[in-house]
Image 1 (cartoon, helix red, strand yellow):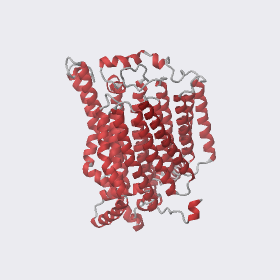
Image 2 (cartoon, rainbow over the protein chains, first blue to last red; image 1 turned 60 degrees about the horizontal axis):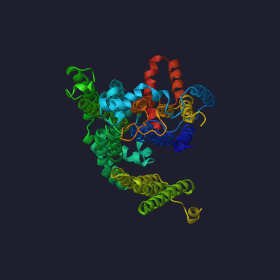
Image 3 (tube, helix red, strand yellow; image 1 turned 90 degrees about the vertical axis):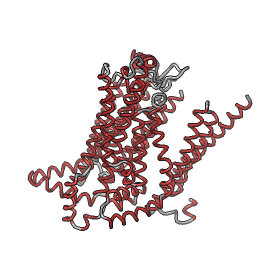
Image 4 (cartoon, chains in turn blue, yellow, red; image 1 turned 135 degrees about the vertical axis):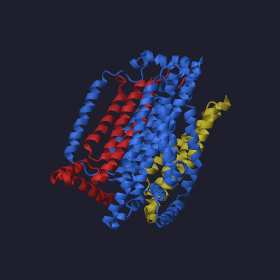
Length: 378
Length: 108
Length: 140
């Protein structure tokens, strides 16, 4: 039994156990934490399977950002699942088992795992990506070369999908001024009890969110009297988490520096725009969890944030248009430096990755903002 | 020759000690009686176990580039894992999680 | 090894668990968690197809001849980030549903819709909104 088999089997066993536990749990906070664990395990599996770039992304997304988004959503809804009726379990189980049987049947035709002569490996495109790319593009990290150059159109499409999500989530969750006024009128009708914030007693159960919540409220607060009260309450909470505050403050520049390293070193080592954007966003989300969203809003105001969402996409598509103006095809970076196609490719990939990084980071932070603000203003 | 053997033995011992700490942390997480002692066991895995493992790997590192990376990972782990444990325990305290009542409870 | 398919079996079991969570659970957030699990299964499947025995990560170095295939890595790398974007959209929709209906259980949402249909469409908007406010108090 080789080492690869041993590691795959043990990590996959843990992953499956986690997945089973998730389906059985009715407390959704716990299920979310286990989902983070599943993300971490799958990131480890990606490392074992040689996919380093994917592992960085999954570690930052699966254990970091998606967990925070789930918790933010649970804060705004209900954290406990209703009992599922038994007949639903049976019907769902039957469909799932049917799928499993079909897949197992189909798996007989799959090429064996990790063999060197599978169709994936013998396809001529493998030779192009792994060896000819060194002459065409000259970037050691072939993942970056394929992502930004060979499959540049595809990546542009993916970026537009992310951009669309970044526009839609704030549209769904952010309150316009008119709606906020109408809601306030409603709250007045409902009486005094309607005014108590449902978040406060809830927050004490979950220390980390507590501070975030207070911060968010603080950021959104307009009435001075209430604001002062909140500020003092928040000061008490903050003083108890001094270690956390100091550590996050110390780590913050390193996280952002690491994001830049991942972005600009992506041609030579594992990394690139997607990973960098995700790490950048994770840094800001951590900061706003600890210090409150108001502090982040001082650095990165909401309009700037929303403005940055399309900037990356425009940079990407704009480079394509510039290539056309220079006499090449859309996203043909060879034209950037006349006479030196390799250098042109290098610049092109760097610009593309930067654009991807800007949009991904801006979208994820904007999504987090919308979730957090919704909680603060309710 | 003898120097490389010595280094191998030292790194092997460090790796073994790290593994033992990680396993004992996992056992503690399952067997200890209340929340705070379990948090303690969990943070031990992160801080001490991982540090020993990284030190063991550092002795085996080829070239200073991987060495620098390992040292950086170690430094970050040494900052983050006690912080996480502290935040967790603090949150539990705020939530009203009690310390075990008496000595009898703790000893069990 | 028995045909060397063992990793695909693991992947399929993970997909089955994810699909089961999506279909049989009525809670919308739980459905999204199940969808995430299913997604991880699909990611694993793609990455496993690109793996070669004794291969290295596809970053070209001197003296290394065998690399895993970079194309699945590219596809999955983007898919993960797209996945978190779509998950956040799903969560935003779940929040709006909670605010309108006071619940994120699928069955209760359908029941409320049926009840509102019987009351007549004219009142539908009014009830939904008042329920939303009441739900917000009772919720967390």
